[in-house]
Every structure is written in structure tokens, then in C-alpha cells.
Image 1: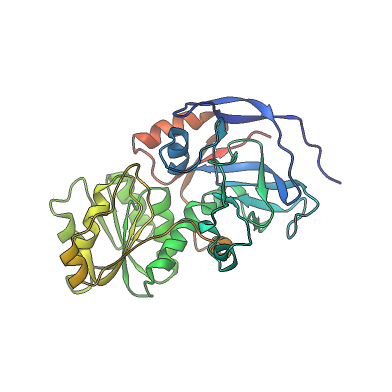
Image 2: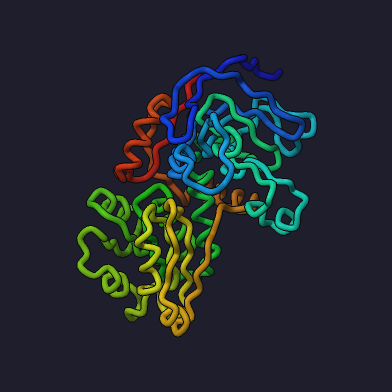
Length: 352
């Protein structure tokens, strides 16, 4: 028997570009033919949510907007064409809310590149509400023995860094430098890297982040706020001082994107994932050419990447460091995020 669904729900709504979010009641949406309605129990807060509120990126922005794209909960309703997931299943709503499933990119496993993509908490309402809509083909079916609060950050941060590590082509035993290692993405990137057999150099600032990174297994922590020569310190931590085999850029500011070539080893791969507003990737042509550096971008993972990233978590290989606060505290989380005072991830508990 399907659970009863109310007409109204609590949500954090950005009513105009720039915010702040307003905690208010809005109607509960109804799923379309190929959609499911998920009763959200927990949702992570990502830096992307802050960018969405501010309208930082040159992509369509729904307004007014319910943000959020790391929502974990239970399916309570579905459309007649929704396949592969049932009422009562545990499910996650991710950044990629839906795609056309028919274009070249969708058919070759590059759904995030689909021109018709729908983005949770940006082009469609996301998970900062009690009930959220997702395309049945794109929601992640979650094992019922997995805690919904702990798995929420995996649905964006985890999948994103896992995809980036795959894109780096780094092999077991090689060294990866993770820039922004103490943040929500970085804390997970370190664990996925370790689970994939990689050696980790964590780059970030502050003693709290140092402590967390070392507890997650980073072999070396380079504090950019204290280092007199960051490039030399990173290279010194790599085999034969040649530099990192791969660099994963998760920083929320532009400068680290300009430094990576200097401490990547010859034939190193630099993967840009972080999206600081209005920033540019720049690299010295001479060094990039003579060191045969490969610089690439990595977006979010496809549906199979999502399955794999959740499986790493379900097997106990990944533990996302997080703090839980009520949904109404979202503005305070955004303030901490702007002050760069968050180690790990904040997860919002959604009221019943």
C-alpha cells in the first residue's frame, strides 16, 4: 500500500538570485510518467549549491529554486513508465537529475554531456525539501542496509571524485596529489584513491584539515598557508622527487589551477574538477609540452560510475566525514562554506 503523501511540505527556497534561502512551505510535486517521488531523509550540502544560489555559472538557472543534489530517501510514488525502481526502495537523487537517453552521449555512457540534461538544484528543484522528483533512469537505487545520512555525500561528492580518479588513469602504487583535500570532495577523494591503491599527497590549509587528512590515510599533508615553497614540498613527497603522477584539482579558488603543472611529473595527468567562479585554467606552454602533461576536465559520473561509487561505500571502503544539522540551518552552512570553515561535509536532516 502506497504511503500517504501530503499536499504541502517544508523546503529551503531561493526566491531571487543571490539568496538567501527562505524556509517555507510549498506544494509537494507529483511525478511524471518516467519519474519517481522520493521522500528525502538526508541531503548533503555541496559548494555547487552555493554557486547555484548566487547564479555563478553560465548555465540555465531555475528561479525560484529549491537547491540540493545529494538527497537520500525512500521512493513513495512513481509514474506508470518508471522502470527499475519500486515504491519502498531506498534511492538517491544526484546532480544529474535526468537526460534524454537517446543522444550519442547518453548511448555511449556520457550522460552528463547530454544537451538535454536536467540538473537537480539548478535547472529543476532539488533535495532541500521533504519530497523531491527524479527521473527513474537516473536515481541511484541504494542498498537498504546503507545508512541514508552517511551515503548522501557519496551521491555527488563521492561520484564526482571517483570519476575524476578514473579519468586520471593513475595506477595502483602511483602518487596522486589532491588539492582541496580537506573539503567535502577532498575527504572522499583521498579514500577512493587509497581504496584504488594510490598513494595520496593532501594539499590544503589549517590544522583541523591536516588532522582529518592524516586520519584518512594521506601519506603527506602540505599546508599551503604555511609552506614557503609548495611546489618543492609536493615534489619532495613523490618518488625520486619527480612530481605527482596525477593531480586532482578540487579547490574553490583559481591559484591552485595555475600551479599544478609545476609539481606534476613528466607525463602527469592534471584533472580539473573544482569550479571556482570566473576562473581560468592556465599553464606554461613550454613545461606542458616538454613534460608531455595531460590536462583535462572531469564532470560528474555517469549512471554506472554512480553504481560503482556507491558500491565502494556499501563495502565499507569509504566513510564520508560529515556533520548533521536540521534543514532550517542551511543558511548557516552556506555562511561557513563562504568562510572556508568546513572540514568534510554538512548533511541536512529533513523533517518527517
